[in-house]
Length: 272
Image (cartoon, rainbow, N blue to C red; front, side, top):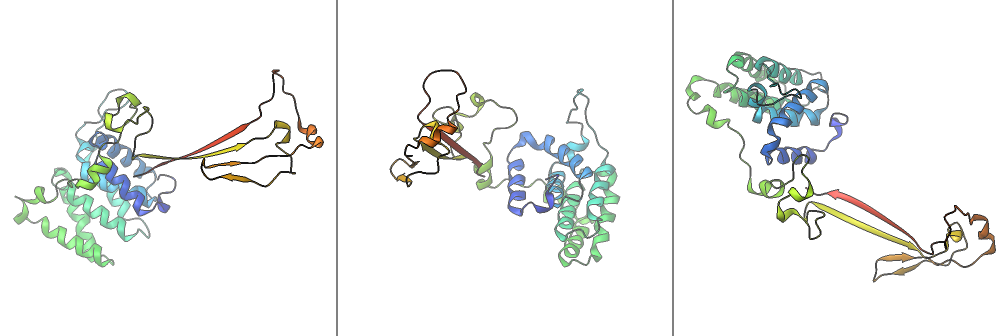
């Protein structure tokens, strides 16, 4: 997303958000990585959307010192630094409407926890009450009302973390995290041979066998292809041709030349 965030489909953005939300081990790591990635690549819309969502949900981890650097020292950001980054994302030239919507949601969720930046958050939200985008304007007006003192008792409950829906928890909740080895995966995710996890990885195998001598690999005088529907393989037989001796190169090693060349192509696709 740091390189092609403008061209990432909404489906991929939503899947990444669901994956993070379903993996508590990733909260602190992701919110810090996304914060610094946005600050360096603020023009990548897909990255900014995922980052704003994560900052709104887990922004408290940016300021509480929970994260640790390589030297073991806590990583602590100032509340104003986080709010300034959100404001930068909103004030870009020709910023999409969806980015402003994500930013407003992020700000209202940070308001209860970012006590020293509340006035700045209120000012940013208030500036969008006259936005040219109707949805942004309506959302900003609603959030300004939510910041009134009448809502002080229940505001935190209204803007608390989004609950994880059952379907998302089932699809994303049991993914392996980090550098876990295969023997550390939950038993239900380990295949019968200790290989792929069923439902997470789909492997398509194409097996192509050319039953021909090595010297005939470049021969153009081939017989028509014979398809074996039962085995799912394609077999091609070649006739003998004295001219193919030109391609019979001996690379040493002795022994008879192999009579069969097998090419196996695997396409691995993660299905979310």
